[in-house]
Length: 319
Image (tube, rainbow, N blue to C red; front, top):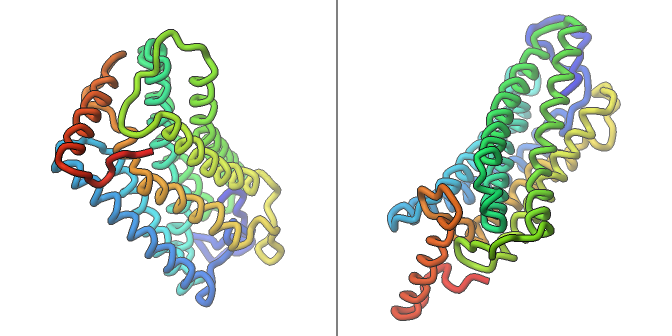
């Protein structure tokens, strides 16, 4: 999104003269591809909403399923806007909306991963993970993400409505800052989880949810690596000097757009549904200190004992 300049003067809004990730969509190529991605995200949205409602009925509170549903809905809108843009290629306002939704949606997955990492850290190092300063640091990160997202969207939209070179330079700087911040946030769960494993523990791991603790770590690290890859690619394409849209680089291609954006995100959200993170990363409602996560493990053991008595149920015996 960064570095959009124009030599056209019929606006505002002014169409970009520089190449962007994914280039301009076409009816023959982008419409069918976007339709397929839209269908997949519709299925995943229905899956996560079904999980949320089933858990709510049985008193199993896991609001992160709602965030995953919200992300899928955002990506459905992203695909719709790209299709509309392909059909109305000269409509700059549609192009702006399409680019804004591409940038905004993935933030929800970054936040979900940070929450998972915080739970793992609290389970392995409860006295540190539950410290007020550490909890405050996470709140500051969440607030910074929201504020930076607003700044990123504002500057992206503004860059289409001005021809002032200084204003465009400021917009580009803010856009690069936002992308770098999001890449850092996408990467942050990796050192947090690895650090929690390498630093000597003073207590035993306070297990929570269902399934093996090592599986939780593997799932989170896999998702974080994928999201970090996508975020880092976007940073790299934005930091490089802008190129005219009639002479794009290889990293502006549609293949890169769909792989490093929608495909990576689709894999992560589908994986979270398949491995049932609503069970693996569930913690008791109202947890506020060391020892509270153990209640989740005791309750899960009681439920598994009950399941063994009455027969197998969906999700029992996770690896």
